[in-house]
Length: 160
Image (cartoon, rainbow, N blue to C red; front, side):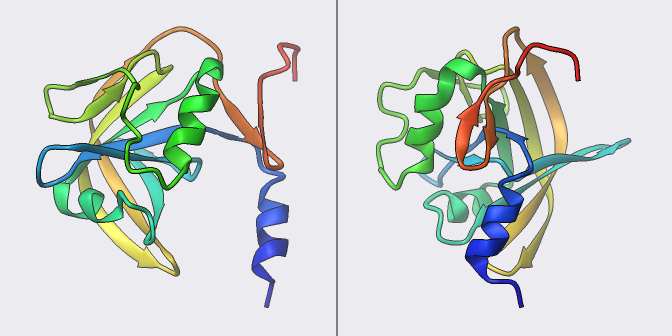
């Protein structure tokens, strides 16, 4: 069996984009978490997935709301990512956002937004995999915030 620390260390060698997954709780309060476990699943129909730790403060609202938004962060949003990765209860205080037509919190200045209704959930280990049917998308300009080997990074700007 692979030890959790060793598993985390090896997965850190896979560079990922950084997202904040948002929804509203039953009292219409916005809630969210930083997630790098996000990917597309299908183009037709358009589906994405995000993996959420059962201990996350946003887990229950995500499960109950039936919808979520994925805010893809730009390089300038590292502090916002850190805030939403914390256990603070006031994650949205001072963070500009708007509610979409679907009632989902969309963070200002994100690189892109993907709004979803929950198509399916799968409990696996200490996380739940949320499959989202993409209902709306938007994108802006800028450079993505990346995470690699335990640190925030940026694109080098050179060819691969």
